[in-house]
Length: 187
Image (cartoon, helix red, strand yellow):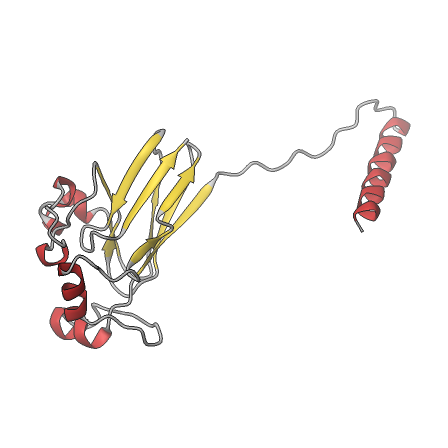
């Protein structure tokens, strides 16, 4: 099959060259590949239990449509306090290597809001009960009252785009669920 494809490609190029030369055009111009802006994607995932989250935080706070495997609000706090937060609440992938100039698309496919906040070092978020003993990092301090944090919020079913990252390592975390972390290495 590979030989057939190669033979067909040679035949097409030969026919184009013959036609171009027959037209008095000694230069064969082949189409150039289309250039495109490089993109990468990170997905925010969670398994909030609509019944317990909405009862405590208000109607439609958790809009999870997953089938089963829900984490109740009390389980979320218990697991975080024990230092073993729910691994199903995560950014995927955890590590991303990209070229400079790549746009990173962050999509919230979970049931509740998250933030995608760049931090100098990983640490706690703005809800002390979810920090697992870590101190709140300065970039998350103040919660949504801090405009810089509010700008990094991603609502359920929405997305944000990060562009212009300089070469080097960039750390991002959710300021609500601080174990949701990503390292982006820009080359």
